[in-house]
View (cartoon, helix red, strand yellow):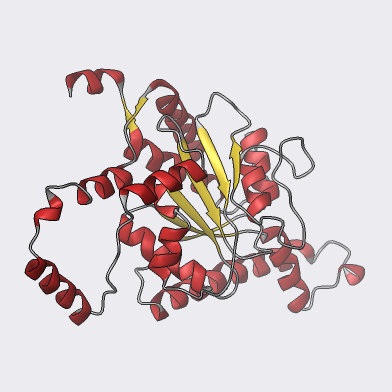
Length: 303
């Protein structure tokens, strides 16, 4: 934990003391929509489209200037802030994860609403509970199936405005999960595959493996827990890689987390023995945010 915590604290200091550059994805979209880029001949555009189709790559329709403005207004986008989205189907634990990362319990004032039934009908916007941190977290409504092409869903939801997107997954990837991951790659937006509720899944695996707390004098618990934990890690990693392979997407790490552990890491900076990838997820999020958007004052003046 010490190594990860030191890196997290260092990145937080950089973020607090640096200036923010514009979102590079939005900059690229603006450039592509510029008059200079529109000087391409119709023949060139047709040739490029045919080449993409021959390679099996679906054409991407870039958002227009008007669509970018509408998406930014929808999420109350501010250039000085970092905008992190959490997406996934109903019941995947989006709201609880948003709360834990913000250092809040589900019952705390200002926490994102949670429940067994999907409580997010519209995009939820939540500033970090530590106002010195320039982070805004978004709870994205989840749906398992799509009635439109993936790129169209991505554009219509305005997901291109975010600095990074966390995709919460279950046993199988949904069409929405794949659409987000595929279009994050196209727009060069960092994406993170996360499976939460580890503290729920591992005990369930222990039961499936024959563990019964009523028959245990505590001598079996640690052995069975460790075995179930390793199985949970290996099974989840294998499932994620298979899903990515079936969708012809590049391999990505999957972060296994418990919201309780994540909350403890954020709020108390302590980790129980049951910790998995919570600290690594935080470190990677902040590291990417720094790399994409942070400029030291002296570097900005030199530029």
